[in-house]
Image 1 (cartoon, rainbow, N blue to C red):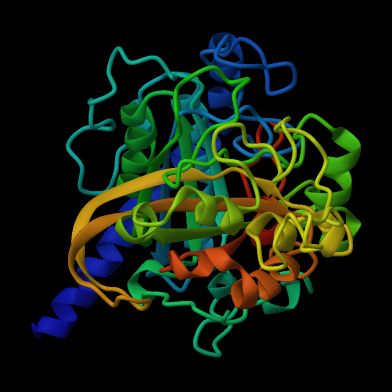
Image 2: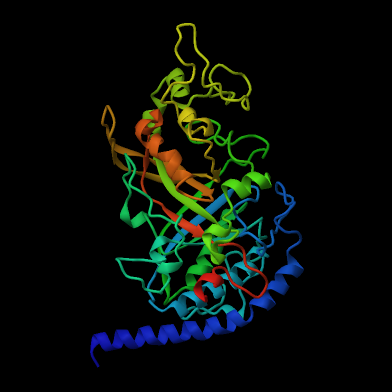
Length: 432
């Protein structure tokens, strides 16, 4: 037998094992739903702060978008290695059932045996509470068309709003950290709970999908009523869309009839790791930092104001007639008032990947070991064309902050609506 024949036989064996396991798990989705209902008190609606250890997985919308932000995230993008749509459907059924157990604080049991794993659960989260764990699934543009090939017969079901993101000025996207056919966003108040969830899903995907890239992130753990600060030291998210405003969410975040049945009650997620040149930023004087952002560093208030939540006065002038908020200040370019009212729901995290050797692309063009840290930018919108693309097209060209930040990867993903009991995420797309 040739080496190629042996590889083909191995692939067939792995696929048969996966489909066999998937069939059992998919048939048990309703059982998982019942178990989750018994063990997860409360649903997304009404859950605030950290008073709910467990958040229900099922609902009209996928969880992990509108609930209060957890302290940690673990984001993973996957490439599909099977070209059979049945495999993708089976994987999503398995993932849905597994996510329901994990978010309920339950380990995976014998119904979730991976093709080559000795145990159904790796065990590092044993006795660990769910800590508000949410798991959110998404589909990348390459699920529909990849290298001009419609692998799964889904190209005709790609919504008009689900575009390929354009290349923006200043982008330095690393191919190995960009894109993906599928994505998983796990969030929890415990970093190990978030990692554990993605690890189990990756194990279950063996033979069908492989990890393409990952990024972990964290947020400050102080009072939720205080706007968190990013690594530049500024309050981040003061003017963010209010997730509790249902009218605003319906207008700017949740997809309606225009997305087709499979995207109804879904949303589009843009995720981008943005490296911040912290050493360069730390050499800047406070006044210049504030001019760059357009806000006071200590209070978070717009330049010239005292209250963090004071409205932006984009017409205010100083004694010499110059605008208090510079024309190329970050807050001016990001404001709804300068973008035809466009808004997005930001759900961003700080990341720290240690240090790496960097050649800066700005004066004084230093080279050497620098922090590989920054912002894991995540946002949700009803239409990327009128959301992220609308906002970032001008910001990428004119924002003063660009001399300190570099977009190094990421992607755009379609986040389907939530799954009813007995169904799995994306079923209306994959089985239609």
